Length: 318
Image (cartoon, rainbow, N blue to C red; front, side, top):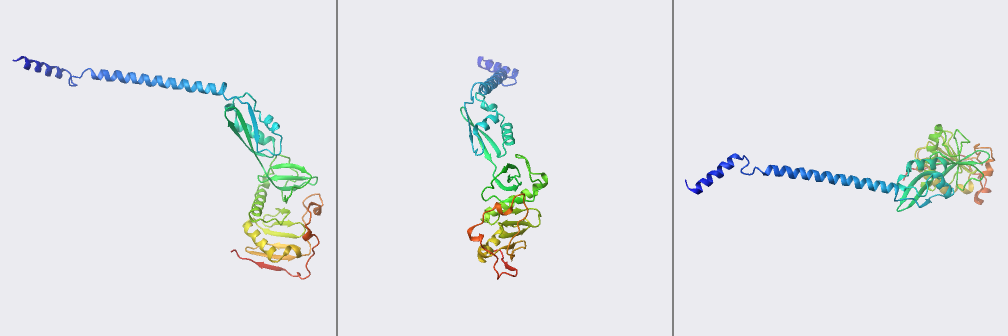
C-alpha cells in the first residue's frame, strides 16, 4: 500500500468516527456563541431598564419643576383665585399633577367653569385652559333672575338685570335652585326642550320671543313681549316651524298691525288669530310688563279692526 493510499484511508476512518463529517468541534463553538449572545442581550436589557428608571426618577424629582402658572379662557373669575383653588404649587413637578382631580375640583367650585384642560408647556409652565358655560335661559325667582346653562346647571342666582336677548323659561319644577347645582332630574326633559328651542332659534335667526313656556310638553309656547303668543306644539321640527312663522310675519306684516296668536302646531301650517292683546303667563313675582322694553315700531300699535276673524296661512316645505 502506497503512502498516499494509507493517508486517504486514515482520513476516511477519521470521518467515520465523527458523524458530522470531520467537523466535530463546530457544534460546541456554535453553542458557545449562542450563550455569549444571550448574555449580551441580557446586559442590554439591564442597561435599558437602568436608563429608563433613571430618566423617570430625574423627570419626577429634578427636572420640569413648575415656575409659571397661567389661566386662559376665564372671564368670570379672578385668575389668581383659580390658581389657588387648583392646588398647583410652584416648584412642584409638572408630570406629577393629577389632571382629572384638579379639573373636577375647579368645575365643582366655580359654576361657570364647565371644563378644564391642563397643558404642560415645557420646560416649566402650566396652562389651565378653562371652558366656560354659556347661559341660554333664565328663571324669574322674584328677587332676581337665575341663569341656566344648556346642561341645566345653575350658573348664577339673583341677577338683578336680565341679560340682553336672554329669554325667561317657565316650566321648571324648582324655581330657586342653588348656584352651581343642576336642575332636578325631573326637569331633564325640559332642559332638553329649552336647548332645542334655542338651537332652532339660532339656526333660523328667529328672535321674536322673550319667554319660553315649557309647562306642557305637547303645547310649547313662545311669547314676544305682549304682541305674539306663538304656539309650537311639540318639540319636533322646530326649525321648520320657525321658518314658516318668519314667512308669515314678513308676508302679513304682523309687526306693525297685529297682536294675538300665531299657531304653528299643525304640520306645515301657520294660523294667525288676532286678539288685540296677549296675556303673558305668570312667570314670577315681578311685573311682567317691566321685564321688557317695547320697540318704538310696536309700542303704540293696536289691534287692526279689520282682523276680526281667524286668518290662516298654509305653507308647504320648499
